[in-house]
Length: 396
Image 1 (tube, rainbow, N blue to C red):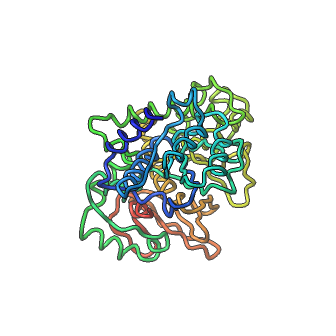
Image 2 (image 1 turned 90 degrees about the vertical axis):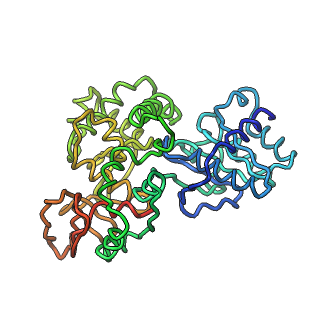
Image 3 (image 1 turned 135 degrees about the horizontal axis):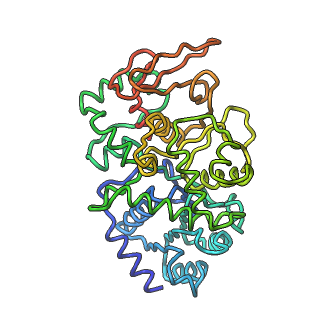
């Protein structure tokens, strides 16, 4: 355990606490068992280390341990927890839990037997808590770490601090919000940079190549993380990459499972399974019309890459502007809202209907007394039901 403590203290001391994300929202660090999931590369480990650093500065005894450490080749998480608790430990944070067999049973046993410890576990978005071998659903509070919002990017990259707004605020008060914002910054000066290299916080590390880092993470997800999903059979890197590139290099389209299956050389059901895995891994987003029954064999009515940075990485020079716009809007809004497709426009959130486009997008009149909000890229200020796209980057 001494080596783990040394590694933990080294990582905690190195982490920068100058700027700490307020995400995920509302996490209760005083609850005895929390779970943190999210797509690889979104900053889960950094956020865990920052929290431990703050706790340590207040005199608490803390420990960070990644379950892919060599220590766990000969020791179990339960054994570590017992030793740490006996030593006066208070906060034990486990990272990469999906790398350890039967991790859920170990976490459950720690929670049930070591009530002196506050445990937080984190893993990839592929983490399957309900099939983890332990009944954690009644014990753990689960949170999702999103990638950076446009607002967070401005704060972390350019030290520009701007407030969070609700979806209702942006829809109803967008002219006032944009006017206040334009008195401080010109958001479009930074928006294109964010779309290309802003969703993942790689830019915080000097001399790190953004596209190369993201490409490596995508391959790691496909080769390693997906292998932890029950029912997944490995060795499918080529076909999974082909699916991603098909999505990346096409404009937004109504999904035809048979056509895409033929294009990538798979049968229809196998393709739908793979699409489910890619969705779980935080690489693509499935969109459906309301009242669709969702399962791992549900055909998505529409697909997008999960965020605009993935289009920059995987588009291979064929940048699909329409897809990038929609991917940005969906990635920002979906963190706190459920999004559906709409028969008369692009998307629906509760009773709000949205159409996404460029600055020359024509305002679409709604039928059947439906109000359609037109979201335009490339404009600083909207009017009436026309709203600038960038404003939706201030939802968290």
